[in-house]
Figure 1 (cartoon, rainbow, N blue to C red):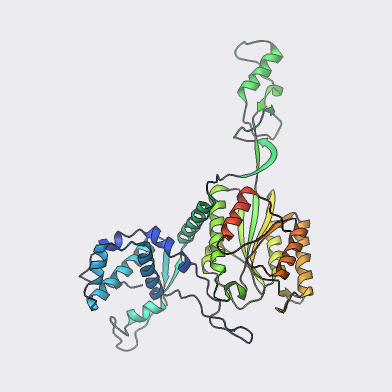
Figure 2: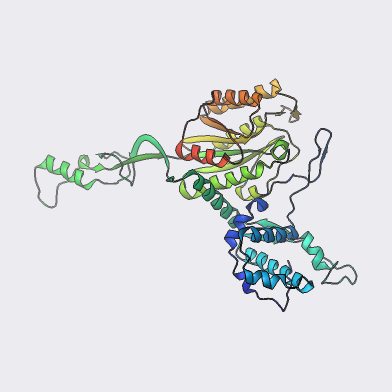
Length: 426
């Protein structure tokens, strides 16, 4: 992207802005869900909306709003940018916003992509109707891996601050194993144990056997004692995100909060549970796995809810990993309404609970249980039929169900992951 230059501007104003605070305020805009595929007409739903605006013009507006909300405009900035409300003041503001976008790009939070521009005849380069004006509409921005990771960190901080104090750690189990951290009594060394030697106990056994304190001491294989540590299990997690139409229906965006939770959980696992893994599966008319880096750009669409296909893909992913624990965390707000038939066609029925769809979905739940996979469901709705369906899923999968909303979703998911609290649906 080409940035404008103006002589009557001091770049120190843009340099003084706290970029991390700015990004935090812009999180909802950067992760906005929108609708996949642009405007789509459906005979039942009508027009389903447009793609999320990823243009630089939209980015400038979001930065301006975030600056106002965060109070980062100093009196000097306001005075310098306000001017007399003339064209010169507008140029100053445009340059200020361009400087901030350039800083975000240089520091690796965003990248900008523009299609090649070929001048038509003698089209002017600057001013209204110029190439640069058209470019601001066509240039698209995307979050980089660094930007995605930062938003995950901030989302985790926000969620954990609402929970109060909580210590991060590995998943505790009642078993003991040899390791570096000594949490249990010593045991006699066996082949294959980590040689975390308990020197005191080893010397005591040698003295007891020989009855001598002579140095060097006579050590035998049977004298070796090693510390035991609490056995820390590793866990493979698949986070299933519903991208059906209802996730952004009736003026409520439920998918963007779900993406924030996914980024927070990913950051938590990467930084505090390095032995664990997390994969992301989107389910709608069908299901597909996406990389974490693509999560920020994921959108809902005019889709139904093929829960069975999502569970089938999640189970396949988990069975390919050698972990002590395997779990599915499913975030949804609707009943299963689609099914993949043996011939590959998608059967859809959004009117009530279709028993064919429900039966196939429960069959996949049972297959997950037989494979040792726990399913924890986080339902963003409280319809009676949905409650009954989720009860059956939890009973079959021996998992937990949480009926929550977008405000408490992250708290419930992280509390479940960290503390393994049991919540019974009655």
